[in-house]
Image (cartoon, rainbow, N blue to C red):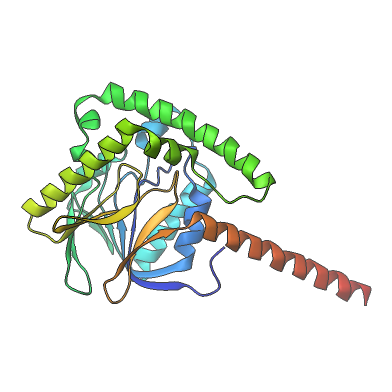
Length: 274
């Protein structure tokens, strides 16, 4: 259910949606997509999780609805740039193709309203585990799925006490020393590559860790994911970049919708009584 008035921005970045994976929070993403109007929509990899689909086919209606919503935006003058990642690497065979307002690129340079040049890429090219050891990456994916299943049960318990959504997976990942070290190394590698490409910044996904920060002279941006944190990045009309955390907004939207439904039911009851 969208917010009462659509949010109007110049650009939106989303990545790591993982459609076809049971941990994908498609309903939250749909609410986000329905709530935003944008000139540019950047899909920064791992939109469809072919790894998970091959292992255990899963595709509910909400996942189809996400695809329809994205294609609907492309049909109504939003330029959609798709940069595939490692979980949807099959789409890299389509690099260079255009389907109306939807284009597929290996990477892409976007110029913001205030003149910053941002290199957009998924980032798996700098993940040695994915690049050099597929079996180890698959093992990590299996362990991650177990952790996300635990995350689901934790949040069902929190909901009983009216606590907002919280990611156990993200919490543990950012508390483990090796994971923190890996994230830092990944960010430094992306910043170094962006510097070699002579751009002002880089926008990526892959590690499910949303962040905007300066690494020396390079602006490093990661738009997060729609499995753990439900995050995206905006470019406002003046070029300002902002990370958006949508899980709590979704909860507020659903609560408002429930209130409206109850009011509607009450009105109908009063009319019948009259």
